[in-house]
Length: 167
Image 1 (cartoon, helix red, strand yellow):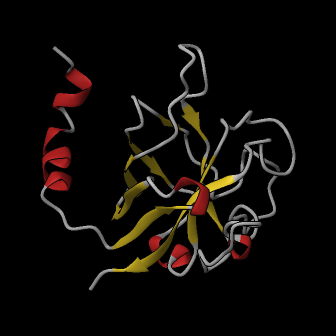
Image 2: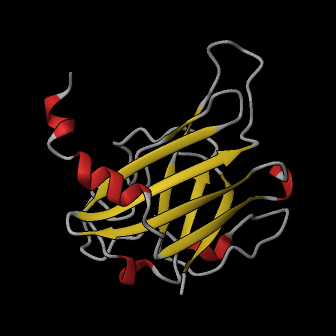
């Protein structure tokens, strides 16, 4: 049915049984305490596979309201913050090669919420797991416009997770 998948099916099965090399446990800000989830990071011979699962994202009462949330790796190392400024120590997008947005190494596809739940998997060769250990993943309140500098006009930081290596 899908010949391109069949040719890679052994690779996909191998990944399904693999253990992640790093993880970020995602928690919402004081204003968004219901957000919780994980981002798992797998090093492969083609790059890093990121699998994210998040629940408790804001749900708009409007059918056409925001259900798309920007998702990035940030250069900072801490999710500490306060009610006035959630996650100030996350810094900007992870961008070791000084590229314009959306070509930062930390620019990732958005999370598409389904009544507050999102699942996303992506393969990227923009970084290695080693280079992102100690950094943060951040969920923003708005979708990334993939144009505005320096961060896509993606709104406030509503959730954060510190990336750490699993043994």
